[in-house]
Amino acid sequence: MAVEELLSIIKRCQILEEQDFKEEDFGLFQLAGQRCIDEEHIDQLLEIIQNEKNKVIVKNMGWNLVGSVVRSLLSNEKEDDKGKCHFLLLDLLVKLCNPKELLLGLLELIEEPSGKQISQIFLLLLQPLQTVIQKLCNNKAYSVGLALSTLWSQLSLLPVPYSKEQIQADDYGLCQCCKALIEFMKPIVECVIDNKENSVENEKLKDEILKFCLKSLKCPLLTAQFLEQSEEAGDDLLKCFESEIIGFLKKKTWDYLEFEEEEDKQLSDSMASLAYLVFVHGISIDQLPMVLSPSYLLQFNMGHIEVLLQRTEESVFSKGLDLLENGLWRIEDNSLLHQYLEIKSFLTVPQGLVKVMTLCPIETLRKKGLAVLQLYINKLDPQGKYTYLDRIMALLNLLRYLIENNFLRPLHTGLNMSKAHFEAEIKNSQEVQKSKDHCSLNTGREEIPNMPPEMQLKVLHSALFTFDLIESVLARVELIETKTKSISEENMG
Image (tube, rainbow, N blue to C red):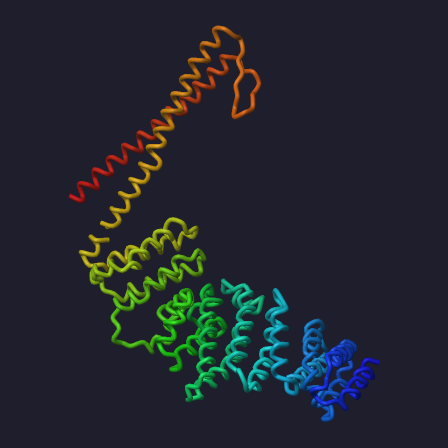
């Protein structure tokens, strides 16, 4: 019945010119075609689509059937023969239909799923999407940008595997998606490289590729962990993805100015990720000029290290520790000029190390933060060390001042006022005891049950004793603070 209905609609449309197709015709064609797919009339549908007489109709209306084919492939485990027929139908629609409409239809399908279905749709439609993009002639850069933006948005929803077991299991398919994305990107990048003309369209295409690569450096590569350098590393699809992405960036297609412009667009995370991969993992490091000094490279990376250390994810700030350690090991002890301390990042990075040492819940990272800070100080020249341990003393003095003014003094005042209040209450209670057997107390605005005077006096004396204890502890703190201050002044002298 569905096949006959579809044939009837096609027969009526065959006598019409392409521009005379109505919205109603599109809807009827889609409904009848969907029924053919749902009822498994795939062989008849293939015959109809391949019929030369239906070429114009399929070109304009066939793209509406792609969603039904994809959903049918995903919803059921097809037998081999039936599955092949569905894939053949999808390939035919991609080949014969209007590429502009197909592009939008495929991207809508890619945007629909969530969870583990994201990777299923992703892997199923990347090849058809690539075919469609290659067929487009006009506004290719716009289409590529739209496709890459949609693909990255979906990719960023997938959880990044952290441990070796998670990477190998790849439950959500992120690693497989990254591998497929590289294959998707290669012909696009080659198109840009092969086009020697600096046309406006080619420049736009370069921009879209650059944006995608930099966004990929942020997600998933910024938080990704990689297998150790071993025979297993070849199976690490995320590591392969990082190598290919940096390979795209290192091709002599983008100049340094373009990287600076992208960095200005708040892509500091991406640039920090790139620095980590190049200097710690050594990817494409051989393309850096050999004349760059270790001190210059450290200065170049300090801003990126600062960005990494500011993040709270262990997988990210640990990369900041690795990148800083890598840069420091290249420098001889006592050779880092003190003038570098005039650069903001050379002071803020040690502050980031202190945060790791004090706030990180993982002991190994806290210890590494301390070791890297000590290594950093060892690399400073004598004047640098003095200029640094001096800023530290200044900060400690500021902290002591803030504690004294914002905490100790107000605490003193509060204790004195509270003690005076409770001493007055004790005096009043003693006077009440002479005239009455019971008294009442208010706490806040609520009256509490009557309390015998003896009990009230006991409570008041207990509170006063607590204040004496607090005052005793406070006196100890001030004594320690005074001794520390005198020692630091002697050292300064």
